[in-house]
Each structure stands twice: as structure tokens, then as C-alpha cells.
Image 1: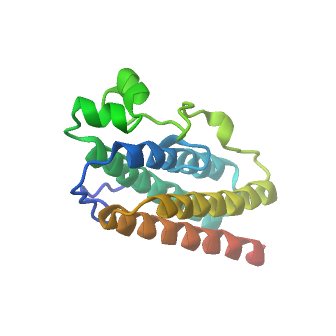
Image 2 (image 1 turned 30 degrees about the horizontal axis):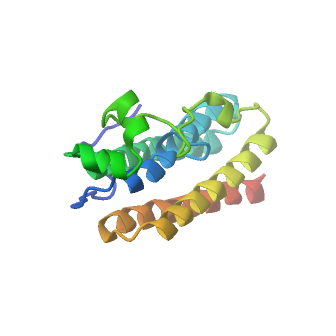
Image 3 (image 1 turned 90 degrees about the vertical axis):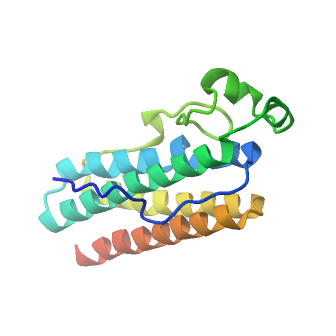
Length: 180
């Protein structure tokens, strides 16, 4: 069903270590409006979708969100690789480090672990598609907030790409409401 191409949708090449920024970006990995929840939401909603073209849209976007999850995880990894003890302490990354070292763990920026309670699957077409519109806007807003906090051009280029894809997904879900 899926064809996996072993390259990221957009290249991630971060030169500078920045655990403080990684601790914020992790929210798009496993936060309340992050890529993990989005991918599982859409891939779960597709089962109750009676229209093949909309089932395909949910599958396409859900699969793309998995690719975004991989990009966000890569960002977090590159921002935290080769940390020394001083960087861990001064960046406030110590609590995360104690639990996960520099592994990429799905959690909110506040440290709360990812939970399926942050996503909705009702089986009602209108409710689910409306939820998806809101979810894409919340993800876009989170990327906007990350851009406000980041001054790293290597990170910002990736975040802008991901932000743009949230807008495209919002538009695609918006088109479904017009076609029904």
C-alpha cells in the first residue's frame, strides 16, 4: 500500500547544536497538534469514509504526515547530537535528557507525553473533516510559534516547508466540504 522512499521530503541539515530549540520543536513530533497525532487521525478516519476519493485523500495526507514526523524527528536529533553536559544543563534540557538521553520521544514542549486523547476520530464525515481543518490550522500556528522562537536558518527553512504543507492540507480538506 505504501512505497517508502528513503529520503526526506525536504532536506534537514542542521549545523548548530541547540537543545533549547529542540525542546520546543519536539511538540510537532508528539505534541497536541503535532505530526504523530495528525498521521494517526487521518489514517484512522479513512476506515469510516464512504467516498473512495476522500478515503484516498485521508490516506495521502496521513502518509505525508508520517514523512513530516520523520523530518521533525530528524530536526530534534540534529539539534541535540553531540551535546556536552554544560549545554544540557544551561539549555534546561536536563529533565528530558535524564528520561530519554538524546532519543526522540513523542511529547509536548511542556514535557507531557503524547497521547491519543489529543486526536479525534468520530466516524462522522462532517465532524471528522471539520476537525481536520482545525487540526491543520493549529499545526500551522505551532510552526508559526516555532519560527518566532528560532533564529537558525537551517531549522527555519525546514519549518517553513512544513508550515506550507499544513496550509496545503487545510486547502485540500476545505475542498472536500465544497464537493459534498
